[in-house]
Image (tube, rainbow, N blue to C red; front, side, top):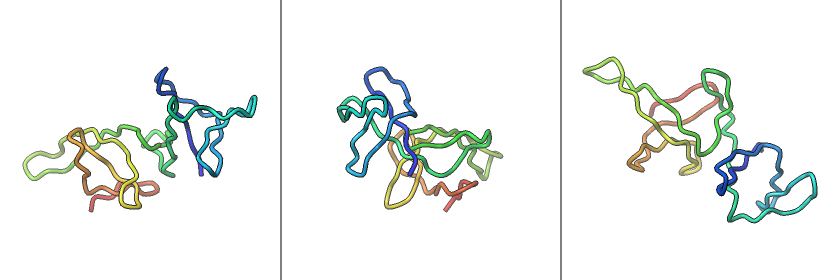
Length: 108
C-alpha cells in the first residue's frame, strides 16, 4: 500500500515517511516514530486524475455531474474510504453515489 502523510501542524504533505503494520509513522532518516496527533495518514486510492496526478484519501476533486436541465454542474468532493470502498463526500458531508475506480469515476 502507498501512503502520504499530512503534517497537520504545518499543513504540509510529506511523501518520504513510512507507515508500519501497526499504523505508526516512521521517519526513515532516524527511524523515529512520529506522534500520531501531529500527522494524518492518507492512503493512495490507486487512481490518478486527468493530469496523471495520484489521488489520495483527503484530496478534493472537482467533478462535472451531468444534469437534465444543464449539460453539467461542477461540485467539489473529498475522497474518503467509506463502506469498504473509495467514495466521494460533498461539502455538506453527504456521501454521494460515486465509486472511485482505476482510471474512471463511476456514477452508481
